[in-house]
Image (cartoon, rainbow, N blue to C red):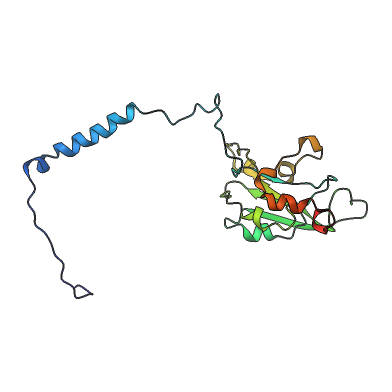
Length: 190
């Protein structure tokens, strides 16, 4: 029974001889296949040739340091809450006396892990972070044969302390944010 009480119009159109033998449809499909043989190849011979990525490509994560080499992350957990794939886990700890040169605030992430198998590279963690501690870089996440190797901890995520080896994320920020960061009087930029 039809729930809308509308009558359906059914056509009983007879197929022609060519439609019954499917010859035009087969020839049209063959023509499409043959036309693809003469098009420019879209694949890249990856190990030898590297593809050019956009400046705002979202790849491997990095935990940033401030100008003095201290970790920016304060283990607030906003990135973990914002992550739709629930790929980020962290454990907060209190900074001990004498560790002021290592951590920017009194609270820091003693454990910070991102499961790259779950991550969908959406950038929500980057947007949620109030301290600008986490960013996605242009670097590709390498493939692995074991699952354990794709759970990145602080040993992989935190950028080097050497200022020359730091990751440049300025292209991921808008001109307004870069102008705001020049004002060192604001506590956020210290």
